[in-house]
Amino acid sequence: MPRWVIFLTDVAIVVLAFLLAYQLRFNFRVPSHESFRVKSGLIVLLAFRIPLLILFRTYAGIILYTSTEDAMRIFATLATGSGLLAIANILLPNFFPNYNIPLSVLIIEFLVSGFLSTGYRMGIKTIYEEISNLRKDKVKVVIFGAGQEGVIAKRTLEQDKKKSNEVVAFIDYKTGLANKKIEGVQIFELKNDLDSLLIEKEAELLIIASPGLPNSHRNKVVDACLKSDVKVLSVPPSSKWLNGELSVNQIRQVKIEELLEREPINLDKA
View 1: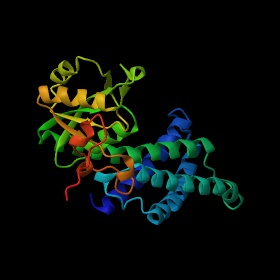
View 2: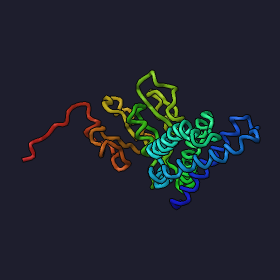
View 3: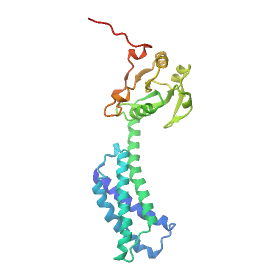
């Protein structure tokens, strides 16, 4: 979307939120004597909101890559404007006696504007990703490890633009996590029936994302994957992530040394 379209959309949302806030303030029965305050309040509101939208450049973010940073910038912009409007509520009546925006209207307008401004960005991003995923062959993935590394691995896979990865299950050897869910995906306990779980979930890929996993558990997982013809990959330690972030390219195949139940023997090749 062009920047000017995003900017005009944000301005339209501010106007809509302000009018809706007034309706909610008076239970959708705004008195006729308030019409002047609504008009004057809207003019003052835009006089504060528009320069701040330009100053904070909320329109500059690419919608398809909307993140929490964009949402924080939007809310910071709106919060700054609402603070200035609250100050104007104190000062302007000295010069314009009929001017006054109820505090409840300012609060409702701030919340509605923030929700709609971030909501439509996330909505467009989600719809685009869903349409893009429909064009790809989905790869069903099981992640071993329901800790922080497992959650990060899931989100990294879902952001992969080349493949459509669908995480269908988490597996963990910690019994306290069994039958719980992470972002809607169920956690299963590592048991002897791992083969049947892989078949049931129609898994094509298993990713080991559990630092410090005992070799006995690692070998059990790899053996089950070999029987079910499931490809096995491993997430490197967080200390080796680029700039502290995990990328799809860093998820690699399991090394044979990782399956040994002892330290590798280094021969004197010379």
